[in-house]
Length: 503
View 1: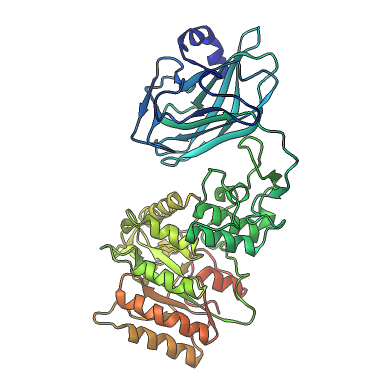
View 2: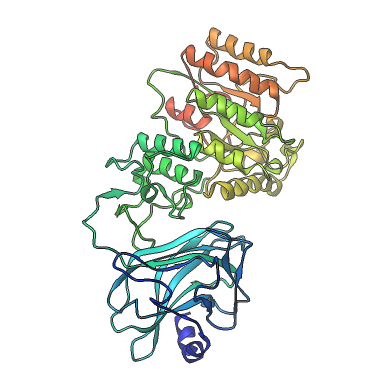
């Protein structure tokens, strides 16, 4: 792509008929803003690099109401561009950032770039670059970029690495950094800046995601995937980084103000998640540091969500468990997920285990061939990964608990089954019947270590959990996810096998 640009340097220089960004438009003083292009009242000096279309639109914006839409792109270097004026000087350092958005359906590598002439010809360098997920605003930034010595005729522009997709750009910003004393350094994952990465960081980020507030969370070290926002994906990466530090690359420290181009992020899930085969030991990333020693544990699990008719029973169940600091496993029915993504995100943020219940809950799943078995699992897996912004596998609850040799020899995950069946799906089943089933098992000693089968789609089940959660806490039980229960009790799970209990 670099040589391609070289071939067209003359044509490009002629085609960039753009306003120069200067002190006339953006007042200059040390440490102050040079450029703040939000496109609320115009193009702010930006236009097309070549024959692509750059238009101001109010259909998408990072801040305010407007952004620039770049479309009809024939080359990856086509994008919104503006000539930098005399306020930006060769050999000096500036901060740059911009917000970008694309909806191609795939992750696209994008760049905030600089074109300049050094007397011998045009050159192109990247100020900041990074992956941009589909349908999510992402910040490209570098707070200490030095314009190359001898650079003249500088042009700031936004481009893609390879994709020719349409994209939006907003909030293009540059300033002269003020001289500041050295700032303390904190490692990625040190959410609360206390100098270490521990369960307090996990708890602080969890609390922030649930309440969207708090002073103990710092974006620079909490944004584990470096996409500019805090989501359940960051919490998932933090948990994995805390529990399995030996499986992550060595990370550099990062200052309170970070840059996209100079900070090394910990690997994303697909870089450490193993490719399992049936019979392999499950890669259990559960954090059990929150469970006191010597506790009795039970894994409440809920099938068939999200609720198909707009009910909030699943959220009620989550909230009842959250009040006690408990976790559960939710097996999601794929066809029911669209429109209920917030419930999945809420479960992940609350420390619950998101799991798979096939795409359309087929009656005869145990008669499917290998391709059909895998498709039913993979469609849900891909959907959950897209929502959570991760790449991993998920425990599977088999529809109607029906297994087969084909299923066991095809899928790379364990199958939590049914140690105790509450029968909450039976017509006329009441909350009290579910409560009695669980309480009797607790009292006769058969509840400890069991996987309990429940369904989040019934109001009576939500009522039962609202009563059971405090009762179980008072009677010495910890309600945890399936993976947490096995991890806490020192037991392994294996892909392709069913489990009623961890004992």
